[in-house]
Image (tube, rainbow, N blue to C red; front, side, top):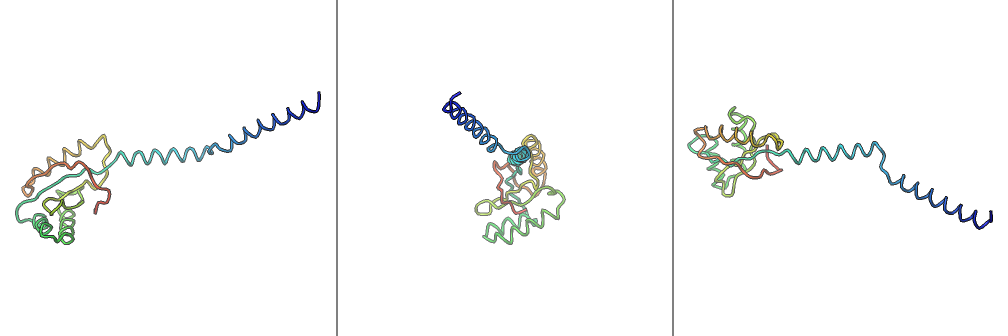
Length: 153
C-alpha cells in the first residue's frame, strides 16, 4: 500500500468518525427527551382545559343585583368585591367565580373556578345554564364564548 492511499483512508475514517460524533452530540439525552415530552403533554392538557364562562344579568334588590347596578354607575372595584363575597356566601354559586363586568356593568361574566376539559365542557355548560336560569334573581343567562385567563377568582 502506498503512503498516499493510507493517508486518504485515514482522512476518510477520521471524517466519518467526526460526523458520527457530531450526530451523537446533537441528540438529546434520553432523560431530557422524556422531560421534553412530559412538558409538551402538560402544555397540551392545559390548553385543552379552560373555564366555562357565562354572561349573567341579575334582577331585583338582592346583593348581586345591587352590585351590578353599582358597577353600572362606574363603581367597579366595590361592585366586584361585593359579587365575590356573595359568590362565596351563597352555596348556589359554589364552583363559579367572578371574571368581570361587561362594558358599562350591564352584565356579570361568571366562570367556573376550575378549568374544564374539552370533553366535559358541554355537559358542565348545560348544567350551569339550567341552574342559573332556575334562580329567581337571574334575569337572563347565556354561555360566553371565551373565558379570560386573568380571572379574579
